[in-house]
Length: 335
Image 1 (cartoon, rainbow, N blue to C red):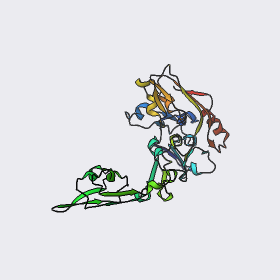
Image 2: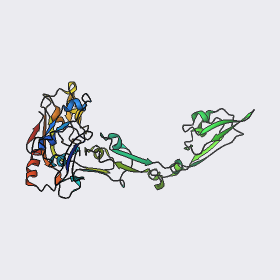
Image 3: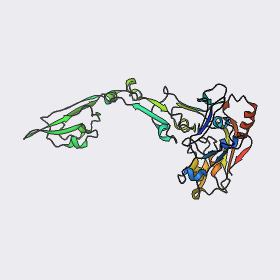
Image 4: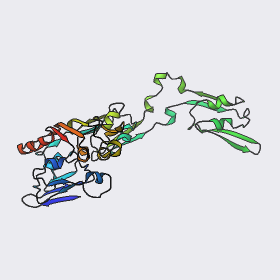
């Protein structure tokens, strides 16, 4: 963690939070005083070097807050008199966001397992078995010959054969476990078991009663979320909605890509948006947030990034507007 702090009429501080940083270089590109330099991003991402992704030059930094405002990952914390500028009305605000609508969510956990930043947790409560399947079952102990066929074949392990006396046994059925599948009834060689599944009488399209729904709650850690869109893409009921920080496009030059022998872009991508297709790197724009981390590490200059717009509002300063245009003008090729 790197920090700069100055006292005056206002106390201003800038802190770099390396755990949130991805080495995209946006802060470096936008800094008006060239006070920010990036380190060896790929070795850092691969865990070969332990250092911050960026270096802040306190002698050059004007503590203007532009870099902290432009960082889509909140990896730069800029404060004035102890208050974060993101909480101040006069400073720009990002429109990128992620939401999961619990009213629509079916708690399948698809988003939780797909999130590249482990930002989603789904807590779910299952209905009791009795709300999903009901029936009746009984055993005629006089007909039972204690062959244990029912015990061995029961898929729910609901049947136990217990010794009642030195010469007799008893079949016991745990009705909390029984799913009334009727396997035991059909397998019994002496027809000692009677069973019926009451749930099977329901209409096929009305089998699931209202009180048997899976319930729960979704938890989205926005500190970790990078708004990549995996949850939105994979959600079967459209309960997740994502707004990305940038609009634009990104392409890879397959002619120069080294693919499997390099995969630097894959190692730094915070969104799991890069995969190998036919031995070459391919970026899926559905999941890319156009941060540019991959352009910083590609040794072949094979990635072309074009940002058309930045979802950042309330940029009042003309000077800041000018610097923000650096993020959207033309192409950004890897260097």
